[in-house]
Image (cartoon, rainbow, N blue to C red; front, side, top):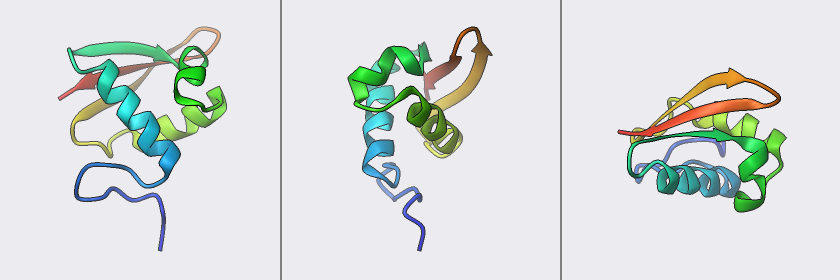
Length: 83
């Protein structure tokens, strides 16, 4: 059984993914935000590389958030919007 599944309450598998999803929900609660992993790494206690991998996993799997890879200028920028 995979640990990377979405549960019925909308939380995502691993503790790291849940922590990142909770952070994204809080940041995007008033609409949309643009986020670079290297700037939020300390806030979520993850490396920028871990954030990038988790963002790809979370993309399309959280019904309350729209996550889109937006651009790359020195680091990937992600657009996150609450639904």
